[in-house]
Image (cartoon, rainbow, N blue to C red; front, side):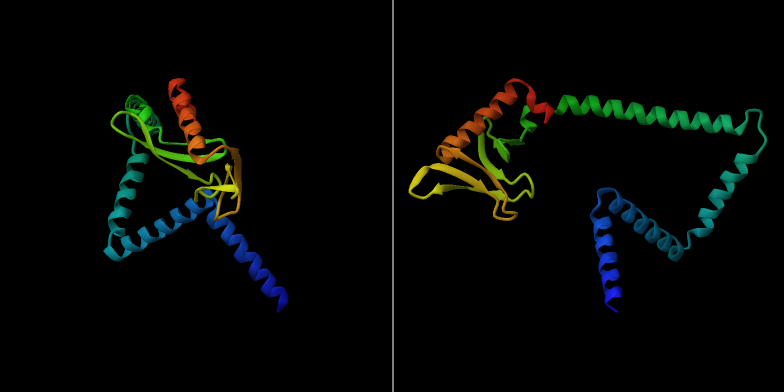
Length: 192
């Protein structure tokens, strides 16, 4: 009985690990969507139409022609690849043209994830700090309440210490804003 419980815990742990894996979770979701689609197709009575479609494709594939079918299939695949590649290139050109420095609103600076907004004049405001590990919002606190010159950032969610800094919170945020401006001036914001 104890061995069965241990095996069951191991199985549940493996399922949780697979469920949270970025690749396997998508595979599982795809299988569930396919199964749901098959059930909907069955209940809606679409299977005969689907069978006729694939029967027509199979008949076409074995039919005699002056041009071999496999050559036609290769031409269709090549044309589809050309359309996809052309679409990707056009999308990249349009995306790159639309991407300007005002889209740069988040970055990890000095070990802390920062998010901000720009006003109509391009000035940074609403600067907020987040834990880079768990994305929980963090706030500065004093290392020693009797010496308000030294601050630290600690994540209240995961307990990770993000760093201690010599200066007030305002001085530190000014340093972060200047780092953001430097990245914008030198175009390093594009490489994040």
